[in-house]
Image (cartoon, rainbow, N blue to C red; front, side):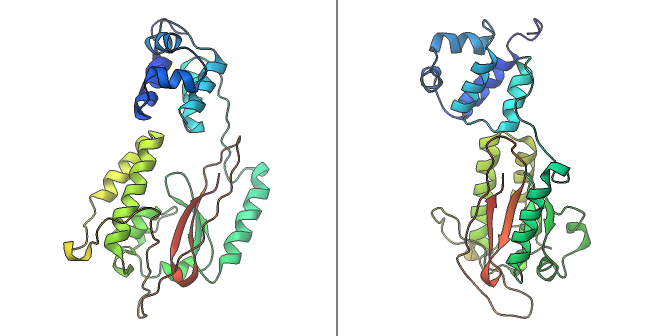
Length: 257
C-alpha cells in the first residue's frame, strides 16, 4: 500500500459502512472478523487482504463496480469485469434482449444502462416518442428525462404527480445505495423539473410504485398493472436495465444484470 495514502481503502470502507448505517461491531460480525481489526483497517493501521476486502464488500452489499474501486484502493487487481453489449462474447445476451424486445411488440420496450440511458429499443418506441423534441431524443436518450421532462412524456401521463413522486424516490434510493455521483446528479436534475399543481399530486403511496398511465395523443387514458422480469448474472455484471412498456403502454422498470 502507498505509504502516502495508508488509509484510502479504509476511508472508502468507512464511508460505505456509514452509508449502510452499521456500527463497526455490526459489520465485523457480518464479515466474520473482529471490530478491532476492522477499526485498524479503517484507520490505515492494518492492510486488509484481498479476501477481506471482498468479504467486507459483500457484507456491505457494495455494487460490483465499486468493489473493484475498493480493490484498487487496496492495491489489488479488480475482480469483476464489465462487458460492453457490443462485445462479441455478449452476442447471446444481445440475441436474448432482441427476442424480448420483439416479443413485446406492439407495445414499446427499451434496454437502458445503469444511468437510465437508452441503449436499444423495439420499433414501437417510435410511436410512443412521436412528437418528442429532438433535444430529448439524442443517440441515447435518458429514460427519466424522457418521461418527466415537461417537453417529454410528462404531459401524456394521467398520474404524473404520483409517478413523479415515486420515480424520484426510486432514483434517490438507487443513488444512495450505490454512491454513484452521476446518478446523484441525475436525481438533482430531475428533481428540479416543474412539478404538477398541488391539487394533482396525490398522497404518498406505499411501495411498490405503480407504473405511469400513458395517455397517447388523441386517445383516451389507459391503465394496467405491468409484469416485471429480471435477468441476473453473479459475476460479469453487465450494465443493462430494461424499461418495459406493458399492456396499454404502461411502463415497468427492472434490472437486467
